Image (cartoon, rainbow, N blue to C red; front, side, top):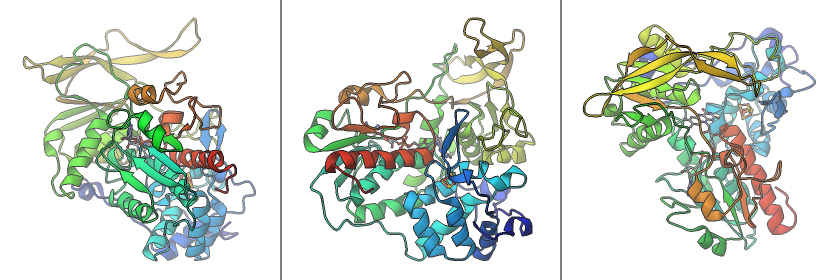
Amino acid sequence: MGKTTGFLEYERVDGPVRPEEERTRDFLEFHDRLPLPEQRKQAARCMDCGIPFCQAGAMISGMMSGCPLHNLVPEVNDLVYRGRMAEAYRRLSITHSFPEFTSRVCPALCEAACTCGLHDAPVSTKENEKAVIEYAYEHGLVTEEVPAVRTGKKVAVVGSGPSGLAAAQLLNRRGHAVTVYERRDRVGGLLRYGIPNMKLDKSLIDRRIRLMEEAGVTFVVNANVGKDISAAELKEKFDAIVLCCGASNPRDIKAPGRDAKGIRFAVDFLSEVTKRLLDSALVEFPYDLAKDKDVIIIGGGDTGNDCVGSCIRLGAKSVTQLEMMPCPAEQRLPSNPWPEWPRVLKVDYGQEEAIWKAGHDPRIYQTTVKEFVKDEEGNLKEVVVVSLSPKRDEKTGRMNMVPVEGTERVLPAQLVLIAAGFLGSEKYVTDDFAVELDGRTNVKTAPGAHASSEAKIYTAGDMHSGQSLVVRAIADGRAAAKEVDLALMGYTNL
Ligand SMILES: Cc1cc2nc3c(=O)[nH]c(=O)nc-3n(C[C@H](O)[C@H](O)[C@H](O)COP(=O)(O)OP(=O)(O)OC[C@H]3O[C@@H](n4cnc5c(N)ncnc54)[C@H](O)[C@@H]3O)c2cc1C
Ligand code: SF4
């Protein structure tokens, strides 16, 4: 619970952030840590609030409130406040597989539900988590348990994103022989080839993978299950298979001129940027992808923001983000009370950088693309955009965003990045495994369960729930591991 009067004595202070001018010249992380004595004061702000919504991980009004992993937030904060960092690490490890990832990329659902945050700034739980895990690495405390006894059971995990890694970690700890198959050349899923390096340095994934390999997990890369390796082959070899392939089917924008050269899906773009950076040990920036281009990003969410930050680093001439929905309020509305997830305007790092560079927020709200305009060679040269306004559908009662006649205008664009969300799992994998899908093309399971319609086949992460968050993927991977273990052994102690 921290110090009883801590929240009255100390203001919230966040770790230092490198200024835009400096950080946009590289792809390195830009959030630093506070010195440990200062971080302990931040943990001291955790109050004895009685009902720690921060660790609830409950759905309220259709949105997750509090930590989906049910991290023991007040207990960890208390141990940090007391400087008992090794114990804090052990406490955090009870519920968490990879704090080094979430303490960088998590939107901190815990902080949005923090009682201290009801009237003041919330406790900086995410930065406390980073202090704990980095202390643990620096002091050699982070190990992956090598099981004393092997069960003789074999489990395949398909996909090495956070859900696959979390499932593999627990199943290996339990003594099963785990093989992770990954179709890309490096493991990590969207941690590797989605989230940019400046948000999550890729050496942190390698650091964890080395430990998992030492503990006995086998990783096979460049292995596209459903194409290079068949479902039948895996079913033959393994006692259980956990499908953790993500929701990698991007939503397209169907407008005239869509075949113009220069229109890409955001994840393909971000993935190419990271791959080329990693292939050159972060020395050669793939400037040719965006330099001197007018870039339009379709989608005002987090993926769009990552594109903004990446394009600025690659020397784009201008960056504009189009968002269909109206600009959210700056403060919580009465219809969105604490501890619900706050639907408020967020200015993320990419937008901050765009504001620093161009003097204004890159987002244009209530706007979409009506047409892509090509030159004679088929290259994209402009987009015609149109304003949208909310209109209720008489039949369904649903509010739709509809184009407003006469508001069309032309924006120069040589690169368009589509960051309009994802439509579920990829057909070739689910077809090969013959698993049933739900209405959103996620793998169908009973509510709260992970077993698919096919014997021995389980699922976790975005492939199970649709596109979500790293913390939720980790939680789902852990839950799937427990279910698999129970099925294989008749009981589980995971
Ligand atoms: C650009 C971007 C930025 C994001 N930023 C954040 C963020 O900052 N914070 C946050 O919490 N969440 C973020 N998310 C969401 C988060 O990354 C995902 O919810 C999370 O990674 C899902 O984990 P997963 O394990 O289910 O799948 P993924 O991370 O998608 O991993 C799936 C893996 O399976 C592999 N695979 C697929 N099919 C096969 C096959 N047939 N054979 C072998 N391998 C296969 C894929 O190559 C991939 O490596 C972001 C998403 C995107 C797209
Ligand atoms: S994983 Fe995310 S929600 Fe959970 S305690 Fe850490 S920062 Fe908060």
